[in-house]
Length: 404
Image 1 (spheres, helix red, strand yellow):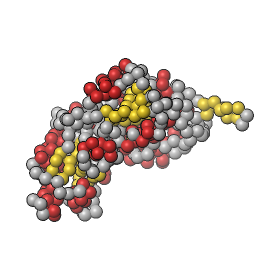
Image 2: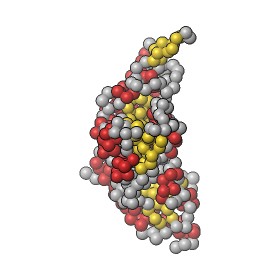
Image 3: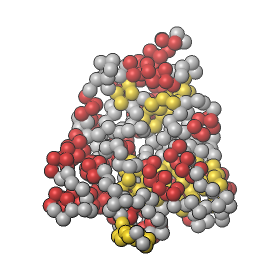
Image 4: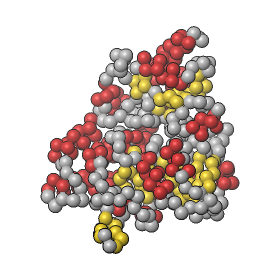
């Protein structure tokens, strides 16, 4: 059955708006943030209207209702990503906080301990590890732009403690073989951490099938609100971790004359008042994900990507960056004569929103030999008609630059 993109997009009010140039909005920046459907907006508004109270602190009805929303969302997430149990889900502000939390648990690493990253990582999966004393090793990419599994095998050793990488690269759309990487990492006693920012909003994620130890992601990448996300972690590992933030809600006993004791996982990692409204929106976003016909949606995305590639490749001034076997709906390209920001500005004048720059992946830019790229990233609500608009926008770029 063909995917009905027009019917799907009608659920997103912002997609019916016009931009500052009075052009119909064509939103191709889904790698940065995916738009929010009416049902998620309404879920957050409904929570504020009817359930707005703090959790973990009240014995009155309103607080108990908020607690139901809070914990039911945890269970929804656990089921959607196939966690073993709901307590393996920790609420936080998103992928970046999840990765920083994990790095904070390994402050005892020494220079003999090794952390393996991929050259294509987002800064959020580089900087937290650089603050540790462990030695970082970087896996190269192949000529095709993929994760170099042979280089990874060479760099694995008995000293490897952590392997941390994106499920899907945010610049090139590279899909990394997480299951194989996890198996190899576990073979030397290392843990496998997955940055899932780009993957949760594009199909079912199964953390047990991937056999990763941790999976961090953000709600705003999967039709939810900004400022909230979650971390999946194996319970057996989380039970060995220490609290990251300290405050109300996560403590069992506090006294001035003795050390505090903390509640069990996951509550011990959720100090203070959480973003309960955002969590209500996240819960609805997970239910929204459940309702999508993902095989059809993914076929639709593949068609959009292939048509966009064809349009780009017809322009002799444009170089589409690898990988050659790309499946995911992210395309990065450079123009022989134009800076990425100039292209993005001209695209904006045609109503097309794209991301331009280094995409928080400067080591990758250096490896590619470029200062930045223009990135197109698609979602199921994008249409074939929107992709066709790229041709006219590219012609305008060449016309303005007088290089055609």
